[in-house]
Amino acid sequence: MPSALLCVCGVVVLLAAGCPALRLLPDRYCLACLCNAASNCSPRIGCQQQRGHTVCGPFLLTADAWRRARKADRQFAHRFRYLNYRMCASDPECAAEAVSHALAHSASDCDRDGRITCKDFGILSRGGPAACRNSTLARRAADSDYFRVLEGCLLDVTAMLGEPSPPAGCGLSA
Ligand SMILES: *[C@@H]1O[C@H](CO)[C@@H](O)[C@H](O)[C@H]1NC(C)=O
Image (tube, rainbow, N blue to C red; front, top):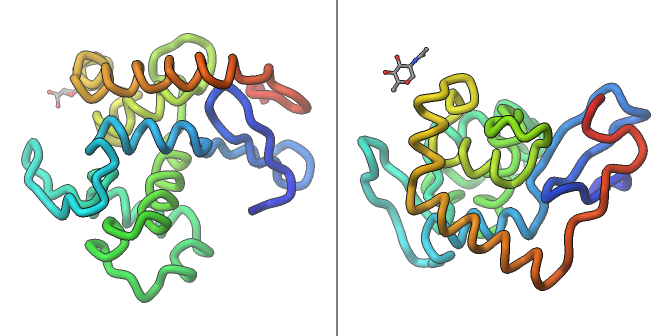
């Protein structure tokens, strides 16, 4: 894990040498809730067809998201170079990292609440990388059962662990 990790509003802010290169990765609670919403985190779910796409593994990872993750983070691509798409999707560690890097790549404030939170990652997971730029796609994603399960999971996490700490250091407005 990188040394400068701050936990903020359901995302991990990765600060690279100062502040300019700010990347937002879903934190582990967000990942657990994304997995929960996708498949109840079923490790042996395998592959299925969903809305015209093949999705595999507990996060219902698409081949496209796997490819974007490998392009966005060369270290990730190198570390899991022996795993093809299907193998990665079924491997909890590879799948979680693939989801993280694919989401970080297109992270933005999809629901326009002024923050990038796990809900934004949920909209991107469900609606695809274009969901934040297309209000029709964003609304459809936010109306899904997937998103309802995600919100319930995040409420449970907040009830257990409290509200995430406010941004520190450079914060999210950078
Ligand atoms: C948004 O997505 C919908 C559904 O895929 C599509 O029909 C529409 O053309 C898109 N709108 C824009 C502005 O890209």
